[in-house]
Length: 183
Image 1: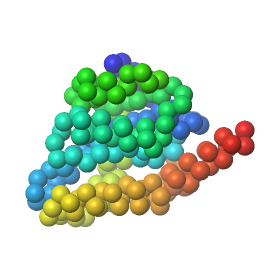
Image 2 (image 1 turned 60 degrees about the vertical axis):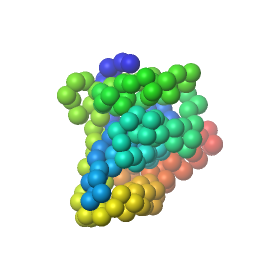
Image 3 (image 1 turned 90 degrees about the vertical axis):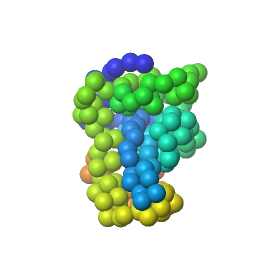
């Protein structure tokens, strides 16, 4: 595991999907108890390519599950930089074993520095402002459905980003794909 925040500059310029991913974990409160949301976001198009919603903070149901979804949705063809904070779910052997045999360099934020993972932190701020804070979820199932609808139905497909020239992540993904095919 490497502490390489300087390799995760947020200025953009990532032309290939699956070149640089960021990941983080947050909490969603329900009246039945907490849920833990882990996301994997591709810096090329700001698309959430993997995510997991769990009732526990165990690596298998958080970071491992989100990473597995990400590589199913967006296979790794080149060298990938995977950046996260220093959470135990990213440092444990269960997660690091997922990276073995793949062209993945794991990078972690400097201790106590949330700015090193600013894009993932920003996603959670946006999601909580646009979705979580407007609901009091009676059940975990309600929170699961709302999270699915937000990520898959709204954020990736409808929410425009200034960093992407006011395109959605899916529109920008298509633009990147068309540029690759034309090249």
